[in-house]
Image (cartoon, rainbow, N blue to C red; front, side, top):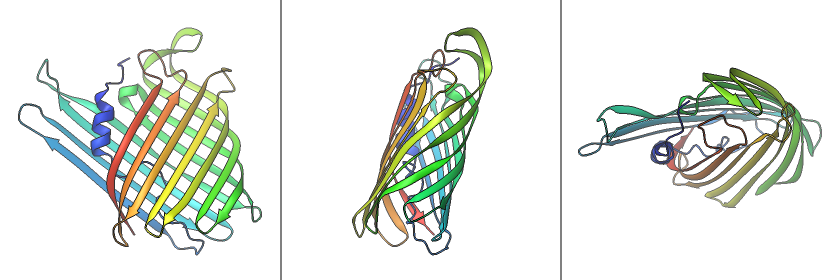
Length: 261
């Protein structure tokens, strides 16, 4: 398996446009479909050649009874190898998914979600995550909200190359397991033009006890016009058992401009 090059983080920070958090779209319970679209690219030439391209999209529809969200992320970058002079891929990532929330009352809601992920340089050919559970609105006012949620999830991983995981010395190309899902999400309108969002999800593995994955996303959006906003975000992903040759923690700082529709 190839280790994750550190250049992925640098290329992602330059290329990814406003992809720190899904649901950067303003949520209003009026049944109207809203979305946002961001496109980023960077190119360098001369003594060192590099290129990157990213696309991110979000869509949201909310009523008094339920909410439906979709998101998609694509990141592709390449750079010239200083030793050989060849061009090699430094990032090839894809994430997409959706979630449906159903309100059981003013403060309690249930949810079901599906997420897909690919990261070829991390040897991840495809990861599917199905989740179901319930949550509670600890805080729900026009300017801020704080939700906690929990449930069960099922993850199915497929690897491009066979790898060793956990205590099993036999290389495998597939790995599926059930996990708990624990999380919280916070939203705060700091001003009429500035919004802060934060989300933490922890997935303790029920098959290999002691192993877990966690994802933390923090994003700040500043509106420049009614349609355009400037986004700054930080994403941190942790996997206690990512496989041989792959680091446990990935972090990504992003900046970009997003168009809402």
